[in-house]
Length: 306
Image (cartoon, rainbow, N blue to C red; front, top):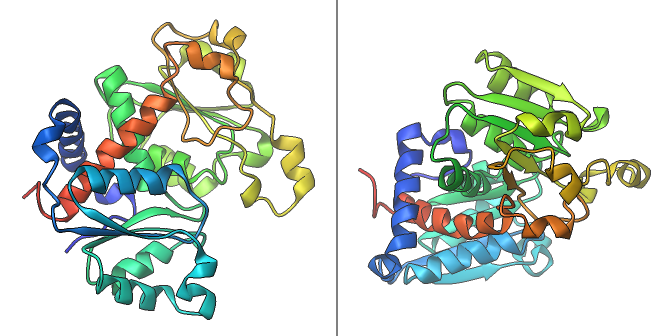
């Protein structure tokens, strides 16, 4: 039995298998419509989510399976003091696979150690969000046809943005990558991520506070929101929340084949006027998340792979 806590637990060949499977699901949905018949996915979300939870649920339904859902920590046994370990053991009695989001870093790891079924980390605090990274990777592949030889700009909240950390970890395994880290000083990429995933691998990178200066050289731009829920100080959030706003005028600086991504939800960091630009891929990214979650469920349940 295998779980997925961090995207780096997947080898590059496994990532390629997931991408290949997702592309086949897009082309041949009927082929997969009953592959999880009789299987149940439990979605345990102890932190607010719309896209990720619904994406997991849609993925399981489209594979012919069923869903058991916990969407409010206050309505669960966690409110009575039940541990993550015990919750995982109990839910294992009802479901064949678990997708779990939790505000505490490491919670998904504890769940996976104690569950009797595969656990998928659907986001644990500011740590990582591997299935969002799978959505990101499929979006890059569908638009660029490769994962190597790309200049990727990451803009906004690089300090608390778990999607950013996961994407850097995943892409740092490919050749000829370059990262451009665009953020206010207060929201720079954590030193440990930069050291382990970029510096130690000899990957070239730049740090800048200017989105305009970075744009002309990018193949991919990954925008993020400044996350109010990660701040202890409301004044700091208000000061930083509109640090970067992508507009049609700024898009004029970019390459004609730039791929603009965003893990959503969007607040102000991308003008709605950019939505009409064919380079805006963030809603395609949402669909890609469902297809990659379908592929991952099939892998962890042993339907595809070895």
